[in-house]
Image (tube, rainbow, N blue to C red; front, side, top):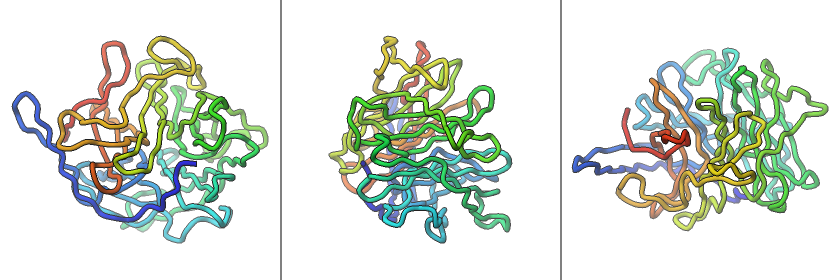
Length: 329
């Protein structure tokens, strides 16, 4: 299993400079941007929020200047979580039924047991009197005998507004086994639609994880990571993408091949001639506003711990996503 690190709550300030057409434009991510496995950006009362491994919360009024907020787990993990756990991994948040549903993963330290939990809150504003995280219980669970891991949750609504959970799976199991899955959830409770006999749809094989599904113009785009996540500038995390007309697959690459993908963001990149390299980009999340799409992710700078990255998500003439230019708005 990938996450053997315990996240350290270190505050980072990083300035990224972009030179384009002879004009200096800057994307400035400043303040508290140290994170690993960031969630998608989620907006509440005019403020943007990102959560990450460890239950860390960051918020911003402009998506550029970030401040640390209170943990999403102020009282620790709920009692149903196994005791020898490695903490909260890769939370993601979706707004549904007037609540913010946070899905998150937990794992034993040896990776033999994993689970995805759910908690909800009517608001993300800690100053709101209604602010309170309520445990909704375990969504799905896996043991070593299942040959799959229940980590890296991504809640997603299909075109009929039905709720699904995409998740999986890590490096513990053979590369020939299904790794990324999607399963239907109950639109009201956010838990499994059929808890006694859930139907798991396998989407991809291999030693991959950190999946995310985004619908765009008739296709569901499935993103995921391969490679190593947690070795600083030596990290080899790579973001891949495939697509399908149906949320349950099959997903194919640009050539139409099954169990294949195209690289969306490589393991070491210089995004749009920014100052310094970005290593091991991973855990993509997508945010749309005012007719534009952005994606967030974590990466390692040349030195130091992983930090939050944000870029425009563009769409090529072939309909496939492209990692785009740095923009402030």
